[in-house]
Length: 293
Length: 253
Image 1 (cartoon, rainbow over the protein chains, first blue to last red):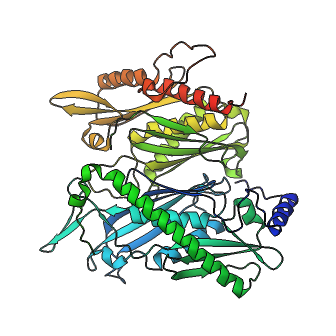
Image 2 (tube, chains in turn orange, brown):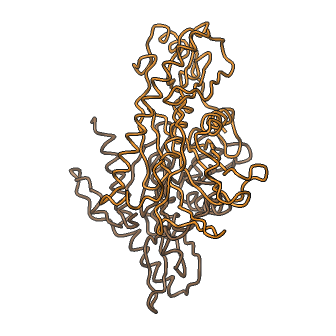
Image 3 (cartoon, one colour):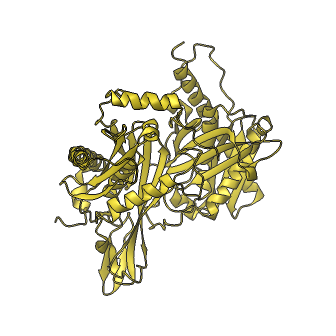
C-alpha cells in the first residue's frame, strides 16, 4: 500500500510559524472547532458526524447472545473501529495501524469504561441470555481530529439507537419484532465527549483545538480529555510528545468543558428534532413501551 | 420505509479520495471511494494490467463469505469495464461502504455476522460505476444494474423489480443483472429455483430498465433533468447525474 505523503519541510515550517503567530490555515481561532454537523439515518442507531472534511459514520446494532461466563449479569457492549482504505489508501484491510489502535483504545476508555451504557440493563436471563450491543465506526474521510468526531458519532448513534422490546413470562423470553412492538432506547447514563488538544512550539506552549490533518502531522504532542457536560472527567490521555505544563493542562480541561457542553446541547437538539420527525401523527407517546424514570 | 423511491446520487462526496459517489435507491444507501491508479503491492501486481481491488464493507458486523463473494463478482465485472491494460503494475482500489439497507420489520436480524444478498448488487454496481466516473478512470463502457425477484402469488408467477427484504424472503428466485451501456449483458447472478422461460422473461424486464434507448440530445442548451423524469430508466439516470456534475464543475466557464 502506498504511504501517505508527508507534508514537506516548507509546509511544516509554514504551519508551525503561523500557529506561533496565532494564525491557522483555515482562519479559525486556536480554540475553535470546525462546524460540527450531526445527522441521523432513517434507521435507528445511525449517526453521521461531519467535522470539516472529517466524516465518521457510526451504526449501532443489537442481538441476543449468551453472556461471558465470568460476567453472567452483564450484557456485551463492543465498539468496532476498523479503518478501511476509503479513509486513505495507506490503510489496509485486516491490518490495524497505530491510528486505528489508538482510536479504538480511546473510544473504549471514553464510552465503555466510563459506564456510559449500563451493561447490567442488557442482561435478560442471568448467565443465559443477554443483549450484545455493537457499534461499528466507519471513517469515510479523514482530515484530522478523528477521535473527537468518532466519539461524538458513537455517543450519538447509541443515544439514537432503539433495541427490540422483550418480555419475560414464566421463564419464557419473548423478543418482539419492530412490527409487533415499538423498540426501546438503551439505558444511557451520561454522554461523554472527547476533546483533543494539539500542542505546538518548542515547549508545547501553543495549545490548539480540532487540528486538521496537516496540523496533526506538525504538532509536537497531543492530549485527549474525555468528559461529560457535568464536568466529570472520564479519562485524560497524553501519549508521549513534548511535556506540557500542568497549569496549561488545567486550562485546557476547563475550555474542554465548555466545548463538551456545546456538543451535548447540539446532540440533545438534534435528537429532539429527529424524534419530532419520526413522531408522525403524535402516536409515539402511546407506542412507547418504557417507563419514565 | 418506502422501498420504491427514485434513485439519488451525489458525486465527489469524499474530499480525500480520487473519486467518490453516494447512491441510494430502493432503501439501499452505498458510498464508494475510488483511488487509482496507485502503487500496487507486490502480491497484487500484474505485469500487463492494473489490478482492480473491490472491498465491500457492511454497515454493521464483520464481513464474511457473502461479502467476499460479492467482491469477487464485482471485481470480475468491473475489470471488464475498466481499461486495465492502460495501467500495468498498478492498482485501482474501489471501496464500497454500505450505509443503509432496508430492514425487515417482521424478523429480528442477526447482525454480528453481516450477510448481504443479491438485492444489494445493483446498488453496489451503480455506486462503483459512478465513483469510477467521478475518479476519471478510463472505461470501455458504463454499466447499469437491477435486481429482479420472481414470486409465486395467487397461483401465478410475478416478477418484482427491486424487491424489498420481505419480498426476497418469500420469493422463489432472486436475480441480479447488469448491462453495459452498449446493451451487452455484463453480470447475471441468480439464486433459487427458476425455469429458462422465467429467466428469459426477467432478462427482458431487466434490459428494459437498464438499457432504454437514450432520448435525443437537446444540443448545448440542455436542461438538466430532475430525478422524477428519470424514473427507473437507469441509463438516463446515470447520464443526467454525470451531466449535472459536469455542469456544476464547469460553472465558472
